Image (cartoon, rainbow, N blue to C red; front, side):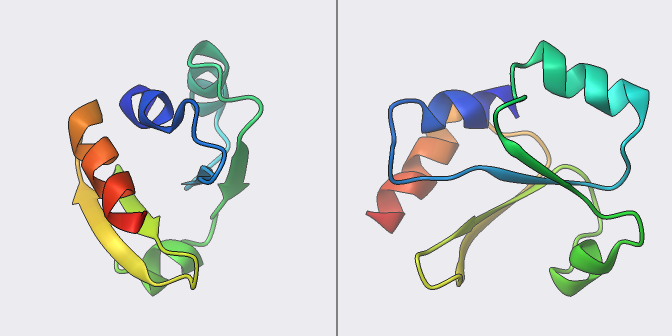
Length: 91
């Protein structure tokens, strides 16, 4: 996720919302370490969101357009340039 946060730097037209499967202390430490405290982190204890989006592995990253339609989906870790490319497709 640090690469995604870097890709979003300076973009006032993009919003990061993270959905976590639990709120464990380890996850909370990770969020604090990567300075994501100002971002929205939602909890999905019952996996409803994960199931609705067909998530079978973590991390899974989605890019949604302004209408809420999924335009890109990344499973696993990716590089900043991949995320920047996905953001540019939304422009």
